Image (tube, rainbow, N blue to C red; front, side):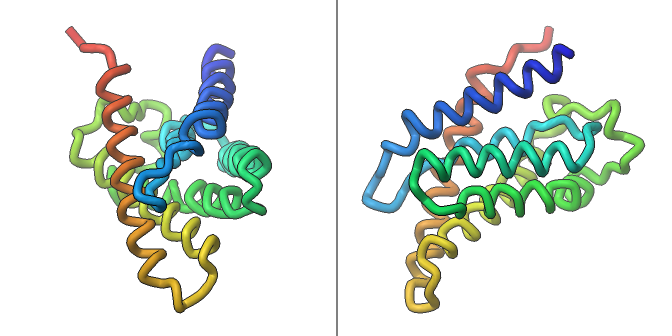
Length: 168
C-alpha cells in the first residue's frame, strides 16, 4: 500500500511541477524541460504493464489538457512506456525474474544514464515530431529534441543527486 501511495504522490507531484512551473520555462524559444517522464523511468518494474501504460497515458493526457497540446504528450508518454521494458532489458541485461529485486538506485551510473538518455531522446523526438508534423521542419525537430533532452536530463540528474540519500 505504501508503494502505491508513493507512486500516486509522485504522479501528482510531477504533473503539478510540469504544468505549474516547467511549462513556463522557455529558453531560447525552443528549450523546454519535460520532467514528467521521470514517472515512467522509476515506475516499479514488478507491476503490470497495463498499469504503467494506463498511468503514463493519463499523465500525458493531463499534461495535454493543461498545456492545450492536443494529445501529443499522451502519445509520446504512452510510446516510451510501451518500449521501456525492451530498453530496460537491453541496457540492464535483466530478465523478468530479476524485477522483484531490482532497484534503479543500486545500478551503476553508466547504465542509468544510458537508460534515461535513450527513453528521453525517443520521447522528445516523438513529441517534437508531432508538434512540427512536417518534413520541412525536420532540422527544428532535431535541435528541439537535442536541446530539450539535455535540459531535461540535467534537471533529472541534478534532482536525483539532490534527493538521493547517502548509503553509509
